[in-house]
Amino acid sequence: MTTVRAHFDGHVFVPESPVELPVGYVLEIPIPTAEPSASPASPFAGLLEQLEALPVNSDWPADGASQHDHYLYGTPTHA
Image 1 (cartoon, helix red, strand yellow):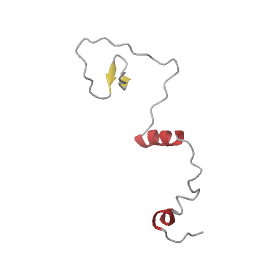
Image 2: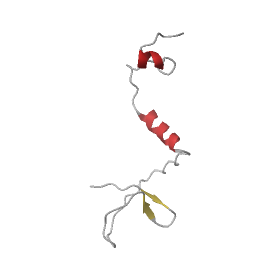
Image 3: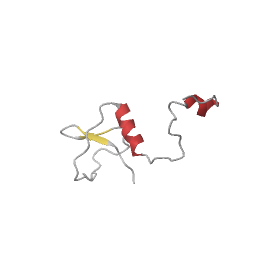
Image 4: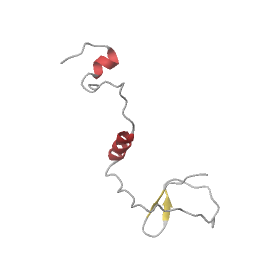
């Protein structure tokens, strides 16, 4: 089964990328019953939503942002 990502422009469904189908090919498109979520304001907002959906890794350091030089390059940590 192939999945095609498309958006609805108010009249027709428009594929997000080219689709290799013959003209007149009939499709069944299941529509979820739940309201679709609003599209993110920017690509970064969408990325943030995807990152927040990832499970938390307890092995990651809690201070990774402030101590990134230490974790990447082995420099001394700072307070």
